[in-house]
Length: 306
Ligand SMILES: Nc1ncnc2c1ncn2[C@@H]1O[C@H](COP(=O)(O)OP(=O)(O)OP(=O)(O)O)[C@@H](O)[C@H]1O
Image 1 (spheres, rainbow, N blue to C red):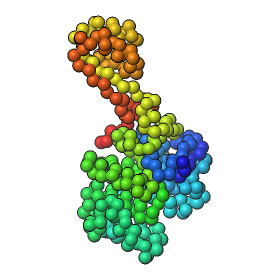
Image 2 (image 1 turned 30 degrees about the vertical axis):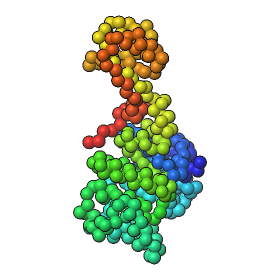
Image 3 (image 1 turned 90 degrees about the horizontal axis):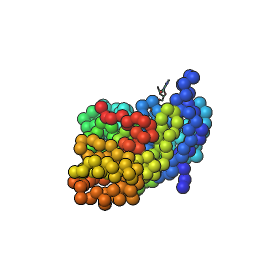
Image 4 (image 1 turned 45 degrees about the horizontal axis):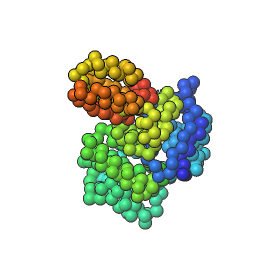
């Protein structure tokens, strides 16, 4: 395992206010890493410091072994950044925007065409390259931003809510590109999202709240730790069913005519169901969701899209 991003005891203060309080985490090379948290958690502060835009107050932040405070230009050539707000020049074509970025990054002239061809192919925009950015849909603009973030061949791509405001089909396409980058180019993706189903398909997730990291693990481990499966049951003998649940020390609640029973103690639940089977009219088992994980850890619902 090779950590391409290393954050150690990072603190950032704005005046007396501690926005990020002594956090440490690593991101493995070639992984897709989701950085989540409610509003004001400290995500943007952390990302902006990693991207060399903000100065840290204390701690060590390394990207590909380079210090983000002391080796800014080396770090900048190792990272690509796609922010939420478009920074494309709308009065230029896709190709012109990419060319401008190549100049900015001192890409040798002889390599420019090949690189532009390569990144446009990655996001399926080869045939659109002569189009003006002003004429593109929101999804296409986001794809151009991703292509531009890649044209200097970074090792890490930072994506700040890459799919916010896009329709489900375009979101799915953006995810295809993200996964392709990871698999075929071994690019490390560091992203923020408020779509829990997107966080769930990442390799690792860190959840920030109040300036600290409150959870950091695989989606599977977090789900296992923070959610419980539940059984939704209808019965035609409620009194007897309640008696059995109580006798077997199973927590339950009743809503809209069905009993919601925690399926944590499966052996006890199966015993109740077996004794009571003649009276059960419907049963459904629901798995815990990643929304439950987020709610359980932060006590807050993830921001819904407006
Ligand atoms: N320039 C600043 N001066 C003072 N306080 C700031 C500044 N920038 C951010 N903060 C505060 O620092 C805390 C962390 O902010 P940050 O933008 O990093 O959070 P976030 O997790 O990215 O939130 P969001 O999801 O809303 O973007 C917040 O309380 C915010 O108000």
